[in-house]
Image 1 (cartoon, rainbow, N blue to C red):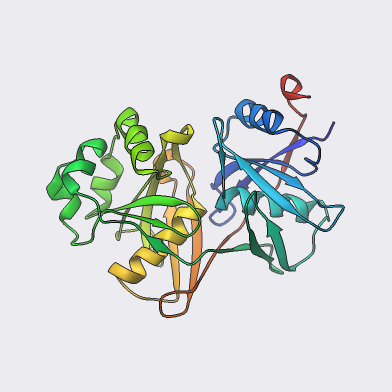
Image 2: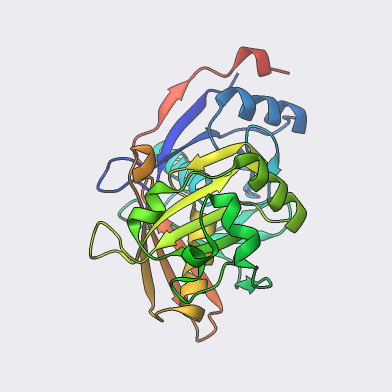
Length: 288
């Protein structure tokens, strides 16, 4: 039975990051087995790689409770593990998803860059609806002048701007109400941010909550970071590169880099580093 690898992704200077499970040779595994493995691993996502031997590399992503179409940090994790095992070389690579394809670049430094989809924007949300879910007032949601709005570069997350890091760090969501709201709006989660990062070289400090998919909070979210860069490009400061910090509230600081290309933009590229993979035995209760 293949081992499972535990891999940090979007580490900051070699520390922190967000952990993902990685199964490198998942060919022949059923959906039910993948879901059972992800549940037992218990990390926010587990990546299952198929098609390595046929040149049709595909990755599927499972949270502990459901499959999702895309996951940034699990993509970084999977490609870092494959590079560590000598299964892939630096360069641009096509990667299949459950539906569609993306391009992943493994550079000579070991960074993994994932090309996400061109951004799409949902309807601006009523602050009076969103604020109680976060334990905030409507005034605290409107203080920046930027809206609460769903944005997708692959997964639809609700971007929520806050005026200060103090407010951001104090947020204690009502997870039941949040999951219900995400289900009602067909969104994945909430991505909160402030333009008051700890590191002055960074763009924003972020927190991400996705209880609808069994993730109360996670320390690095690549898909939402691409969406946030597109959101800031529209509502805030336009730049070619954004650097986001996340995970401090969880004791696992992370760094996610985003490059935008085109005036709209038309390409969103999210990248970061992983640490050293940790090999674990395949969960026995999930074999089958």
